[in-house]
Amino acid sequence: MNSNTGSREMKQKLSGLKTEVASSMNINLQQGYNGDISARDAGRIGGQMVKRMIEYAANSMNGGMNSNMR
Image 1 (cartoon, rainbow, N blue to C red):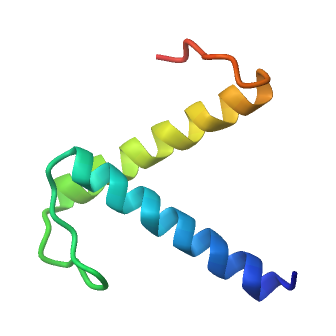
Image 2 (cartoon, rainbow, N blue to C red; image 1 turned 90 degrees about the vertical axis):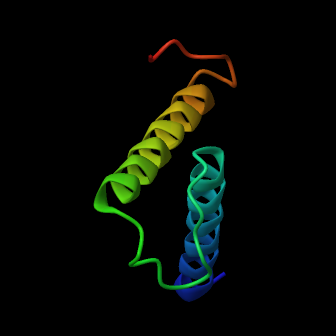
């Protein structure tokens, strides 16, 4: 796998996570440009993405055990 393939896959995964998080927060994202959403909503989406990535990493380091990082 070359670096372009890995980068493309990572972008797709992050995009999917962003869509999943936005949907769970009842924020509608369009494919592509989303400049019409508020800065507050964009920040909430980004914050939840970071929270989920940290939880995933913590669970991975603990051998899949549930973490209490809240």
